[in-house]
Image (cartoon, rainbow, N blue to C red; front, side, top):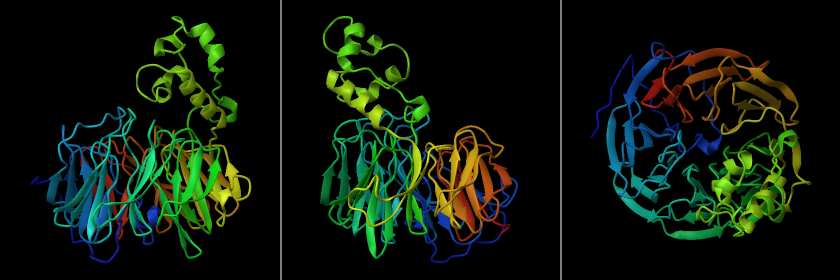
Length: 468
């Protein structure tokens, strides 16, 4: 048992039925109906602070329990904290396995858990899926191969159609898996051979009395029936690598995607393999090493082309990447419901290609869609039409934004990598009304329950409230 640093500033939190059960909360919307504090920090509106092990996963809350996954040293674990105080109630280590490689700012504990009131489900790319009861007892485990990608895993599990669903897109062997939440047994599995690495969490789109599982991926955005994995529709022309999760509002589905080489004015073009190899394949073996490719954006993506990870790129692997660069598109899009098959041209409500977010997912609030581009550039659109209300508006904080936006009451919150939370009005003209630094790096998306703002930093989990 690990006792955290505990700072209590005042009265207790309320105990209601409000929950934040998965990545971006109830329904994956990133939204809490009630208000949350606007001004806060280490010396303002702090309810408590708890030291927690490293990890990029977001807090999940059910009742008075708060759950995290973590990577303390060379191990992996799941933690449960009392959300009133930050005291650790239990921590459970994951079965010992080799820890997957990750990006330099990534973590092998990046996937956020999901809870249903009876069980907590977690995914570690290094191991697979595990289920616990709320006392920390393991109920079942399902080991899965570590993802074939040097940046590690990122997509979080979701519950839909009575199933627990995990996306496992990678450089080769991509698949979508549904298991029975009660015992972890496979219900269905859909192979996704055309898809490459992805770090986005699927979104469950509920409309017109039906559920659709919306899965972002390389080049395509697809909808599946979560009950059996059958495909409903597809939209083509998204980015090469999926990093942001969709959301919905006012009857539309919203998705954003951006990656290098997908903008029309800076598209990466690759020569056909035969032409390129004739000049650069120095030993004439019909393959390319990383050193045989001139420095630049293509060489920088050598590991993505090298699907079998043998440190060589074949003509087939080269051509696959060339086609991906040619077909990729960067945009924020809105999709109307009711489509079947390829709906790229039939159900696109609107599309914008300027001021695009990278990892930070869009958030819908008060009839508007908000996005945050790296560099601290805020955009806000009329959700129904895509008409910009503001675009590329500087918020006064630069750097990258990896956490996704969340909303509470009449405000939207964006958290920078440097650990500053920007608070923006969601009604009238969007304006920055607070800039709240917490003094440590923050990669995880916050959670908001009962007016309390929970933020995971590099070393601490923070709970902020309105002077409670």
